[in-house]
Image (cartoon, rainbow, N blue to C red):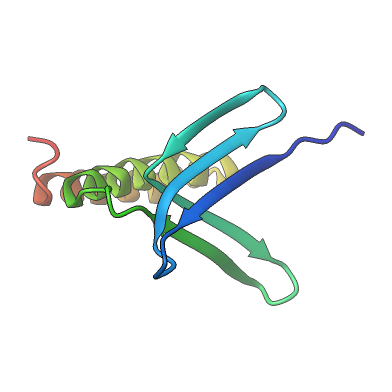
Length: 107
């Protein structure tokens, strides 16, 4: 069986606030630095989601708004592929459009 790893290296300041977020994906030898990361993990024993939300002080509010808008859109696509729920995915896209307009991200 093939295995792959995605590693995160988080540099923290004295107050434990992320200063730098670096990642490495071993499967395709990609790496990079990011200002933010959101990770959701399904805990099947508890039937609940575990999550890690980190962002650096350099992440601006405008960048965070864009990051969430794009994450909502991506989650919608994933939800539709995983469940086949086209109508709900359409409703979710409507919300993404509403969110984007309210945050002045789209016209």
